[in-house]
Amino acid sequence: MKRNLDLLREILLVVEEYEPARVSMLQSISPRDFSGTEGQNFHHINMLVDARYIKLAGEPTLAGDYAVHGMTMTGHDFLDAIKEQSVWDHTKKRVGEVGSWTLDIVLAVAKEEVKRRLGLALNGA
Image (tube, rainbow, N blue to C red):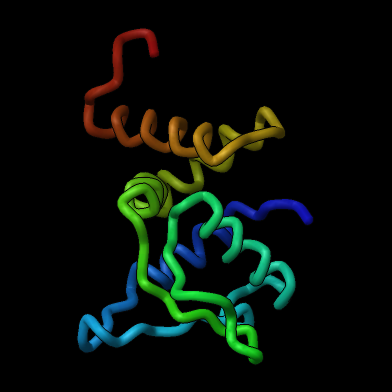
């Protein structure tokens, strides 16, 4: 199964919005909640866990839902770099020109664009 950058971003945006009413309460995430197929969503949720971008509590329920602890600092850093739609569009375009990518490369391209917009880009970069 191929990774889908938009689906990864979609999941992170949803998890970021989770705010448990109490520290002891967890919210759930379901592979049925996102734009991909249930199998694609399940796979992408697990990829985000493997990459240590989100934290889950235990194994999925029989219905396939997960209890979510939330995002890690790494997940927040990645999402913050790609959250702005125009930065995201620019990042996908640049990465798409090459045709291959890793999450580290996506993050580097997004950070480069954010720095450029802030006037922090190095001359000639």
